[in-house]
Image (cartoon, rainbow, N blue to C red):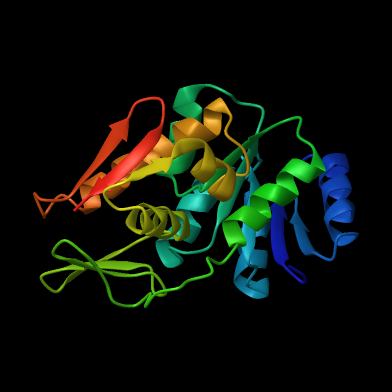
Amino acid sequence: MNNIKVLLAEDEASLGMIVKESLETRNFTVFHAENGKIALEKYQKEKPDILVLDVMMPIKDGFTLAKEIRAENKHIPIIFLTAKSQTSDVLEGFNNGGNDYLKKPFSMEELIVRIKALLNRIELKTDTENIKIGNYLFNLTKQTLTFSEEEQQLTHREAQLLFYLFEKKNEVLDRTFILNKLWGNDDFFNARSMDVFISKLRKKLNQDENIQIINVRGFGYKLIC
């Protein structure tokens, strides 16, 4: 996967330069900003493929920046970089539109795996624009979920997760497999992130009482429809 455009918002100049140069040696194009205000300007100008945002930045923090960008772009993947590790901070990041969460210090290999996992396009063997899930119509290409002409927009990861659940409908979707496929690894924070995304999908599918996403403890999740 070449020529991926990354917007990196990191106020620590030395870390920002290291990450930028490391990604560029691997054929990424990187736009570095040292605060949230500049990052927003570069986002609007450069139209990156993915955002890597430090949480604690001057002028405009990463959560605020993500929330503003999400208001106009529901699809672009967002990874938060932070020294914070409390569950409440993780949840705040996802509630503000984040797709992934990487704790400092981190390895470049881990960051690259997470970037590629978010941008990886599912190789499909079905019609991605007319997937029936109960009384819903799921369009993976457009990342929409429609019920009685009422359309909901899904995020990139919500759409991917729902598709994998659909592919294994009425069977167990292995927890470790999906964590490694969509999040890059199966550590505690990624598992917590997936639980949040499952909860969001349950809410978006709750208009059809015949649809359930159940937790098969110790194994994974099952979409029943």
